[in-house]
Image 1 (tube, rainbow, N blue to C red):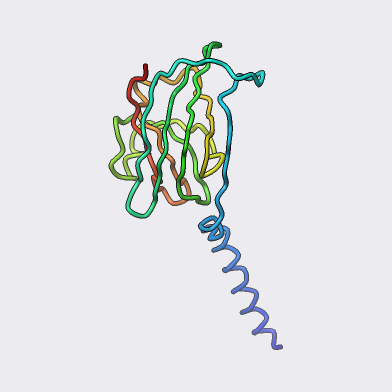
Image 2: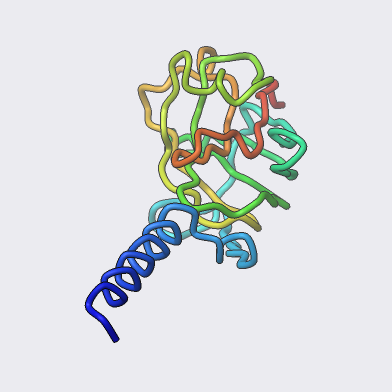
Length: 164
């Protein structure tokens, strides 16, 4: 083959690899299921008090989400955001955000005001736990968002209501 043909093939390969890295199309077809119990740091299951609870709803017509978001206060004082019977779309860079809004109507609202990241989502299906830092005021950060950082899209959200 000619040198020019190799250059074109190389450029196409690099472009395709870059597009794959950005969009991660395999995530559309692969689910990651998590099945965590509510546990103490020592690994023992313990009683907790429910502070807030809400149902997830889809972020838009394309990105779906369902399940329950519950904030538990453990006996040791730690607060845990727990997802149960949770399902959402998978994506390339999905994070859990606590957002300083009473509810999320549009994706652009999520990062407009204050938000706190609880880190990378553990899986797009199943029961999972996220520790809430001690300094987070849940009277201010009232909504949880399943947020795709790469594309600035809210996959699902749940607005907290007082528990029992």
